[in-house]
Length: 395
Image (cartoon, rainbow, N blue to C red; front, side, top):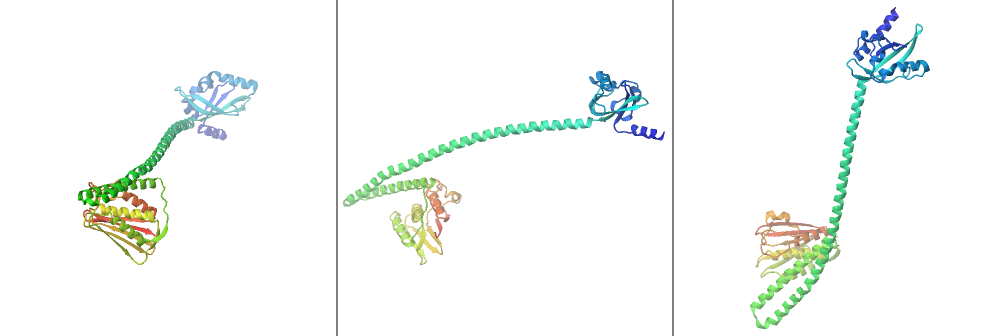
């Protein structure tokens, strides 16, 4: 009796549902967990066919399952287990895991079904499937977005390639135009310059100040045009990467004195260029042509932006392995608001007025200085002049 009571207590308190039926499918016992799952009381199901706890089509076919097993001995659930659906009293269907065992008792067959509710597991599985489906949608969306981005990137790349090709063609056209213009303009300019010199010579016997005045204007205009051509040609060569410094030793003092004499010839009336070299060392190693261009450009600006009866200081100094070049004037100066743009191509300070210029000179100077591994600095105040300092290392 004690064992029977223990067994009953175990069955009544089991978490899973337990139902027993006879060989005709009639329910003989049901534990509380099974009653709770199916929303039935023991009185409602005991003595009834087990099929009342099944939804269609299992309800209609259950008896044939038992009959086939009894005839053939072929097992589909007994001793195997499977997932099936149960029918609650309210008509709702729930999934559960069914394991059936066969017991011989008092000369007859008893079938015991162990029922494990799968509702939570199935809900979690459905949620996981939903998450997976959502993730697939997101992946598909991202993939589509990525494909669109890749297509846009390829189109942009194609546009950039076409733009670069057009820019290359334009660059080649510009280079050819600059070279052609330089050649075509230089020839008539040289003729004009020569004619002006000859006219000046032939007109000496007339001693006419008006003739001398106009000849001077012609020479100045030719000089301005030549300077503009030189600026454009230098810029084109820089842009094309055609300028490579050639470093070689030379006498700096002799070099600077020649520049001073040359620039004095184009200075304004009573403008004096004062050259001074500090120290006893005069030999230096760098590219003379580029250095000459830098100095001439700075002195030309000093002449251009300073008035008559002024001094332009031109100083050089070699200390150790460093060359310092200083060009100082007392001209119109550079406004504070313009100074940050001073070395930009085609930029001109707003106080230059009608003074001719392309705005390329200082840009070219700065680029030449960089090619020589040097540095350029300046100080300037409006109407108090400008001081440029170039520093170069010994090469």
